[in-house]
Image (cartoon, rainbow, N blue to C red; front, side):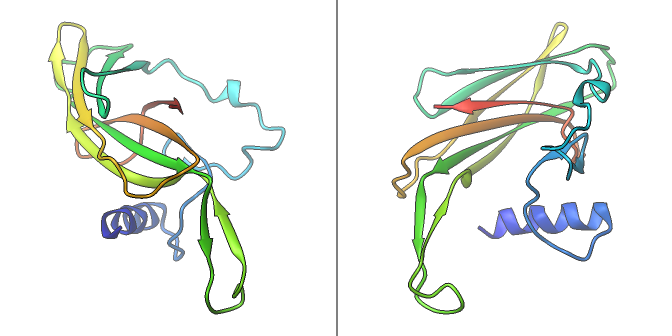
Length: 161
């Protein structure tokens, strides 16, 4: 999707890198290359707040609630959601992988953003993820909150459907 490529270019520009690609893991708004190593994740955690997401009345709709640990009346938030397909296969017709079937997991199928509205000490946003014509083996979702007009996530949650 052109929108997904544009997002990758925006990350690349902010990270001041010449490569445009999908990083495996992003932590605190930066690529985290040692995610499978011995680095202590617990040392990097901070209490930014709680993000919870429940499925709405329609199967593709979700309601996100974010309760920041420090309430600031000047802050405004947006919530993002992505529907991910697992177990997809691409049959390669040419090039160095010609004749191979390449498996793919966590492929972005649908991507949405919604402004969050303050409701007391929390913020709420509603999202709808489009169905896909692809037939993945399984689906997952990921949601994250950012301060309005910023790219770096401040809290995230996700799981398998």
